[in-house]
Image 1: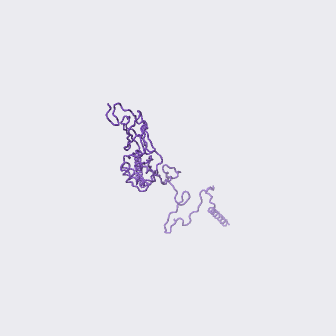
Image 2: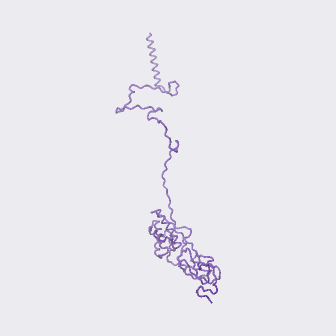
Image 3: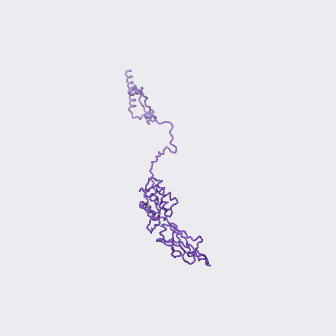
Length: 338
């Protein structure tokens, strides 16, 4: 009877142990060692038979079992050690600065300036001269036609300069021309030309050559000048009476012109000179007009030069005086009257 009771107690003990173990393996995992149920240490079963040996690969090589990381994951080891400081000048929260993307800069070339206005020469005699050829070049579209007229000019004056300008005009617009000829003609007129139009042509040609040096092989379309200061400011520069500013009737004087925009020879056909309001005969030697003072009352007088529809005047250009008694006659330069 005692044995039977002992066996029954032992069976109860074994059944209780099995129930505890089953609860441990089949529960919801919220049980803890201290019974607080706060998700602490999880109870696990011990290794089964043969689990003590490390696993082997198909070749038979053994490898160490993977270690469990501190965060509970198995795989690559967790990052440990001293953190690497961020680059100088940036904080950990700064986003990386993107590299600037290359950009293409498109610069518009400045077209060289063209010839300033004349004024235009009337070309009264119909014979080409440097002043009228300059006018033919006022439109860059006419450079080729003008280049054919230039050989008819006299060898002196601004002939070479105008040829170089017409050649560069064609070359810079990609219409032929001759840069080498333009360079030679510009160098030959280093003084800047023989007239106001010649000086303007020299400056414009220099600008074209400079553009070609900076942008070889580039072609641009030239445009006529619109307005602006004329190349020539035609005027009477001075009246030469021998240095004292006086002249007697019958005395020859010289009238110097400045910035002429026409052939001086045309003045004899299409112009004239007046002194004190009286028309006088005139002779010309390029820019200097030679006239004789008419019979006028003593006093200051104006001198005016007219060409076509243009007239320039120099007020009180000189003073008319009477000849001294017994003085030689200025017209005949003879001896004094006794």
